[in-house]
Image (cartoon, rainbow, N blue to C red; front, side):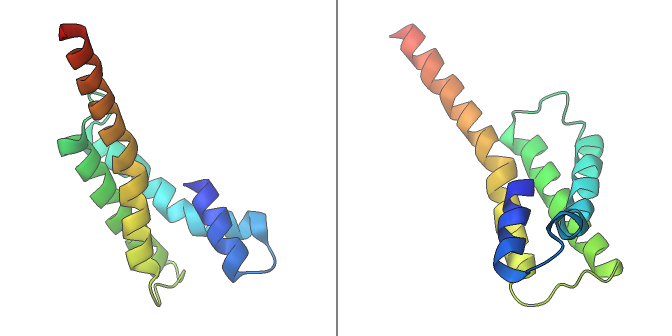
Length: 110
């Protein structure tokens, strides 16, 4: 997630990369922790449903809310880009794990 923030800041901002990155990322990192706690993701971290979906939605909604409440701004396509990117990052690896496990169990049977 931090790599995405750095890349985004690099295309939109010139100065203050470290502080700017932290300023952009902290609401989403705080919401990610909340998502893990609410969903108890440590119990089944690889599941897309319900763990991944809960973590994704809590992270997106909470991160955008914190960003808006602290004056970070929510203009333009930022909320949509954040939602889609978080979905890809938080659900993509889980889907890959599920698929890998299915392929692995299929090849063991065959």
